[in-house]
Image 1 (cartoon, rainbow, N blue to C red):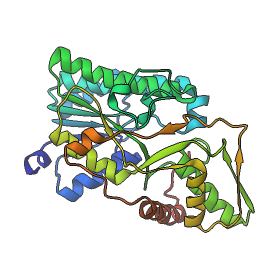
Image 2 (image 1 turned 90 degrees about the vertical axis):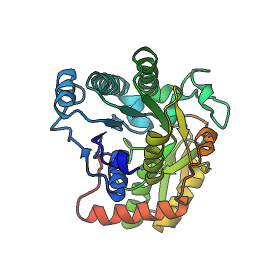
Image 3 (image 1 turned 180 degrees about the vertical axis):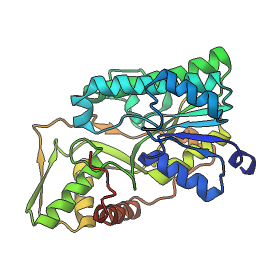
Amino acid sequence: MNEFLRRRIYVAGHRGMVGSAICRKLRALGADGIVTRTRAELDLCSQADTESFFREQRPEYVILAAAKVGGIVANDSYSADFTRENLQIQTNVIDSAYRNGCVKLLFLGSSCIYPRLCPQPMKEEYLLSGPLEPTNIGYAVAKISGLMLCSAYRKQYGFDAISVMPGNLYGPGDNFHPENSHVLPALLRRFHEAKRSGAGKVTIWGTGKPMREFLHVDDAADAVLFLLQNYSGAGHVNVGSGFELSMLELAETIAEVVGFTGVIQTDPSKPDGTPRKLLDSSVLHGMGWRPAVDFCGGLRATYRWYVEHEKIGGVRKD
């Protein structure tokens, strides 16, 4: 660990929820070679700019957490943007890292790579075994392409590029837009605002029946650093908590944490998305890693973070 922490580690996407959690973890461990760039400083969609950055900085380790992300509405409405930008970012970073002497790269994917009606829990081997969820197919295809590119560079060039597929993440630093973000932060904000305004009802999309697994971003960051140091295989690795609940149960839990006492109503006219997404994380667990954050405790801490940062304008709502 000490040798690793002395290396130059580039965290792409350090201002996002996952990237910022990884940076917090690295700093807590004493890393002194963290390299970051804001979007204004480095456009990863530009091949020339990305290549120039890697040629000048020569990071030894790369954690690719930069991505265009969003919830079901954003993915379905802007599928071209999600596909194009993620393909550009991934291709530019992976290729430039290899060409400029990077020792190891970790690509952060998503559980949406698995088929819509995938057997549960989802094992790594189930990739490409059936049709994808139509509402986020652009993002899913881009993430599949990223892990395939890592695999191809490993096979052809011997580049130590690994891929990690986390479940639904939550925690501080998330995007809390009520429609463009992921379901947990979107609901957290909506219930908070409903409580503040005295609204008697909150309506959630779909039937409330789909099941989702949730992983705290600090656990995801811990797993990323664990795998970066302990795994160099060709296949991607799932990172899940094993904890799941339905969308209605999630809404009820958030309402309780926020203190909203009104009615929760479902809207079956809106899409549900994938019926169930539970990762089989036995490969990672077999290496000795386990999540540490309890869901209810993590949710309460996330809400406290939201309230504190909303007061000072430090919450993403784009």
